[in-house]
Length: 623
Image 1 (spheres, rainbow, N blue to C red):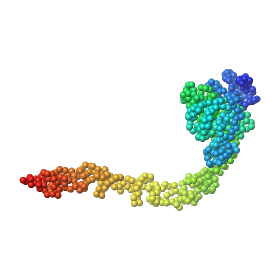
Image 2: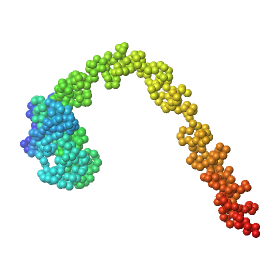
Image 3: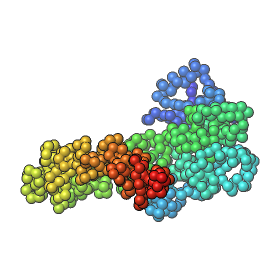
């Protein structure tokens, strides 16, 4: 008859001895049982059974209405063969550590928290209401192995310099290998003393290895009748799932990382987990919990369904955890709310601790409150009756003021304003007609009042209805478009430009920017050009003839006198001097004796046909 698996004197599994479930000489823990069904713990060391024998066992459990499940890992897979801890490597009593002491500062609130003050049963601080894990930790130099009550497998002493430099280092590595391993971790998780990495490690020692999972003394809410279940649970965990990894200085050949799937080169730092065997390894930064993704602190891990977990999330794969006290729940009855699990009685108001099981509650900042505490702490006060607006009443608000639905009334006529337009004046609210009668202003265009809720357009102490705020010429509503005021009138841009804008004398188009003025007439810069060659004249020397502008070159070529000597035009721009005689003209520089080339400016001269001569040259020519 099926019963409890035993062991022979040499410690090997014995498959023939079974006891009835009712005797329960030793409980391996209610792993995977169905709610309400008797628990039949099954040893994790059951070897493979033939299909016929396994079918017989299944029929037995079905007839007895028992449920059972094998604790992980599954030993059918050879690569995941697991060797349990020996009694010489594990202390079953665990380690007693006051991780958070009263008065420790809060790392989240800072100076707002005067120091950790434990809630009677929650995992929070009474002073700041932050979680216990967010406060400073202690004592110092307590690692994962000490918390788990485990002995170090490696006997090689750690280098004193490395111990002084780092809060924790893997065992069995040289100084160079330790530095190489640390360089492979994320920089904010390197446990360098005095760094953020050391603080991260201290926090993860509390989070990943909750003390209430490790020692019965810290279980304040475990019922007496479930203590044996707790002890059996941690014994089974310690035997089949709990272990700590080690760092291998290099493998003989490459292997895939079990975490990320990428290749680990040969002779690279590799994290090994003994329960997975020697053929499975991880990058140092990939040896993390499957649930929370955090790197496993001090390489402590649990195995479940071929995956690695921190102890916290391993336990939560098998048992519900109370969201209030953070302890595992071994009772068959517990509360499920807010997608979380709670001990009976622990699902309570965040303010007064009254149980909310079967009661209405309100969520605020992810915390549940009873109706009374929520209304007392968070409900708004009605601006009319000065009473609290409870959760069963509608809260109507306007500009940080609040009303009951029944109190939202016109101050003058007391009519309800729910779903109606209203106006506000001097901290009082009015219905549309009452507000208009007392306070409404009038439109500068049509003279009608502005009804409550009507959109109003304002400009320099003048007001219009939206439909009245339009161009005085084309009557098009302006709304939020650009407009131009002129002598108490409002114009749209197009009408203003058409009526008042300056236009170019040449092209008759509106000058918007950069115009020039010539003889009191406006021109576009690009339109003010030489009449003959169209060269731009803005900023250049020019002259005019018959009221038309010309550049200096064109004016000289077209209209200036020409020098009798050089035939070039005499422009006169800039005060140029020239000589005129009998309808002939010379540049000053060109008015010279035709024979000796001496200047005749200001001197006497004699004409000889087309030539002009100085007196001396004229005598010589006559003689």
